[in-house]
Image (tube, rainbow, N blue to C red; front, top):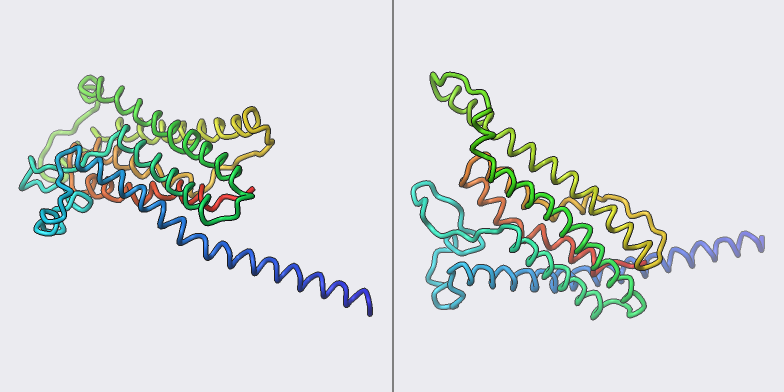
Length: 261
């Protein structure tokens, strides 16, 4: 009887602690998301301004929403219309801002005892989950562009007799660039994971086997944009993917702000 009472008390105590921890995390998450979005949004605004978009509120309000820097897509009827271009340096800037915003939110709103673990996670996210994979894809993309003409000459083509065969030829020409992007992204993610594990063991002296998670793929939506861009130099699809890149790049920041060892 006494043993059962003690067991029930322990179970209830554990459940109460778990519920309390869950409530704290539920309260923390929106705050971390807010600081991450704020930092990433500020970085995107700075990039847009540098590329010629106005941040003057009066001008922005007079501009149709579809023509705002964050929402503007490629229009083949206006091929020379200005768009925000997100390439390697811009992606890294957005990712760094996301991590900084998430870290700030975690340090401000979470218990101070988790500060060191969040700092460690910020290094892991920035090096292992952002810089290494993006540099791999970016490097592969630059090499492909350099030899693109010679590569495409070697791609077989069928005689065009209509829209179907024309589309088929375009797909064939897109295959080498798409394969290079996907392969380099896979290599980059695996290499980034190795870098994170190396940092944990050699720098932070923590024997933690960091596994590849679904959220690790979120910062690489931009690489999907690169793949689409290789299929069609400029298209509504590739510009749409680039427009949602800042949202996906918020994931590393939230991961940092919510991290607890």
